[in-house]
Image: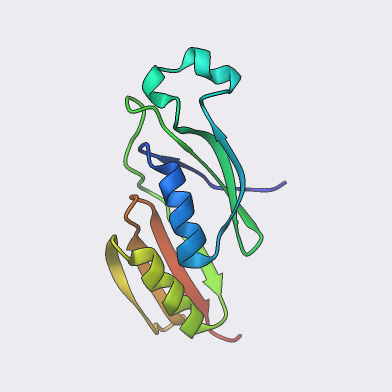
Length: 136
C-alpha cells in the first residue's frame, strides 16, 4: 500500500506547483487541466483552465493536487505536509522558502527532539512542517 497526500487548492494549484518547483525543488510529474478532458462537459466554464489533477514529487515522494470548485473549497486544516530531512541548514532553507509570503506558525530552530523544526502555512494556505531529527 502507498499513501499519498491529495491537496486541494482554491483555483491556484498550478501557481502553487510552480512555486514548489522553484522554492523546494519539486518536480511536476503530471498536470491535467479541466479543458480538453472528459470532465470539461460536467464542469462550469470558469473551471476550464483550472487543474483537474496533478502529481508532483519532492525528493521522490509523491503528492497529488487539484483545484477545487469554488463551492467545494474549504481552507485546509487538521493536517500538515511534513518534510523530514537530515541537514538542518537545508531544512532551514526549505522552511524559509515555503514560508515566503505565508505565515510562520513556529520559527525554525532546534528543539528537544530535533536539530531543526519549523511550522508554516504557505501563501496558498497549505500547512507544512520541516523536521531534522536527532541522531538516534
